[in-house]
Length: 456
Image (cartoon, rainbow, N blue to C red):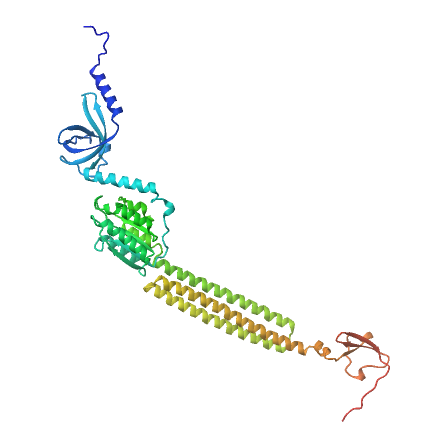
């Protein structure tokens, strides 16, 4: 037989060629069927057959891949497998090398989940630019969940511990089953229309993909995206992700964590803020009093320098008395403010709603303004009193006497600045005298002296 014109394959070449064809023509694919002949040797790899009513194929799933399977695999299970068709050259066995396995029912849901996720992502429903900020101190929180589930109790317990004065509005809904998506979407829309809540917590406890499926519904996703009220998604456990998690303004890993996130400022934080405000007011009042006291001291020294007489001493004593009264008044006002703040702190610890805290803050501001106004008024009174004293001093001044037409006569020459002429006996003829008037001096020479007759 002539073999020179024919290419004769060896068995190895044939198997290798078949393997190359399979690798090229059949990329990674999904396959559904029933597991049979499952074997788990000590190597950790799985070997089994996947069959349907009419055929079967041998499969291998190596240890690294099967370690990611999340359910217990047994013979008879209907599964969904992703893998690559290949050929084992040593034996010529045609087989599927699996790299992912899912329960058949879960696999269908997973595909639907991924399709909806990709669709909504392309529409921009997950975009960060549409996420709303959560309020730092909500007065009312809406909770959309089952009224009988453990998730609601977890949320209520955390809110009571962190911020007992917050109002809670519960929107009871089904969280599982065919009717659940419509109820959840309706509750989100209703809460948003009512506008009674500062934010909403939407969620439930953990479960399988089927249990959480209501939160993967497109109606729920679009209702959450359209809501003007910020939404925290709290579905399942930390490892569970739903479509609502991507649409919501914030995702919390658990319902309890959602309640924590919803109350970033706690009752203890509010009490600390009130204490800080009280310390600030006390310090500001003390500094204000100190400045007023310094100013009073300054004015007092000016009065002492202006006139050393007895009346100035009396006015100084009066000013000290008024300063003491002013200090007592401000101390009394400060004590009243401390009492108000103390009562406010007690009320906050018991039941304080946010509105009462805001009202007390406004009251403190009004008291501070009244304190400033009272201090300013008292200072004006003191200034007016000082003005009257200065007026009296001016009235008694010799310069004021000259203004009324009187004159001051003094001897000149060697006696200049030593003698003031108060009698005709103080001068002799021929001496020079200076007459001081309000607008200048007159120098005169005494030519004649007339003495008035003395009166008995």
